[in-house]
Image 1 (tube, rainbow over the protein chains, first blue to last red):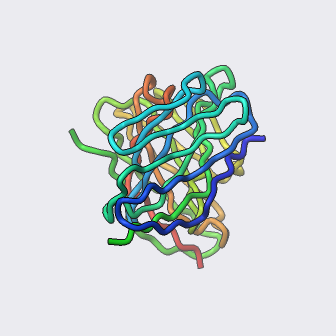
Image 2 (cartoon, chains in turn yellow, cyan):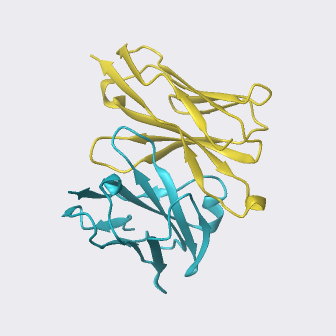
Length: 115
Length: 115
């Protein structure tokens, strides 16, 4: 019940395309849903995060869409660039009431943006 | 403002040995978390420390232990190493407020290989 399922495993798009990465969860005790970007040899870095009472959030070229009833959320990258080529992880955070404010990560999506 | 730094960056151990990994938190952060990232997988939560006390633990056996020091730096200790412990170990620091929104600042990790 603590899993976050992420798809696709890998994605190749052309420069300017809009890659979409999808995640689904079961545990309703999750209260924040961040996305992280990881380049080879580096640690993950926060991109954007959303609360479950918000349906959409945009930061620059990155947009999260959230469907609370379906327990699904997705990341869209507008006007993708070769520099966006990285592995993207969705995550979900347990609420403080659970006594454990840990992140549960999806399995990752390796994105390649071709010039 | 210095980021999260981890040492060593790479190390090789043999099965049954013990290892200590170190982490210096980002300035102003009082919470540190440790995650294990197997190759091609998302990070998995090991435990979290807040003001020198463990305040959350994932599904890892007791041979994984940690410490947080008064300056908020931290150590991860793993005893009786097993082959499956081979992974990238990530340290993440944050303030207690940012932890509540899923915002963690990761170091570049320590790559452990167990032979």
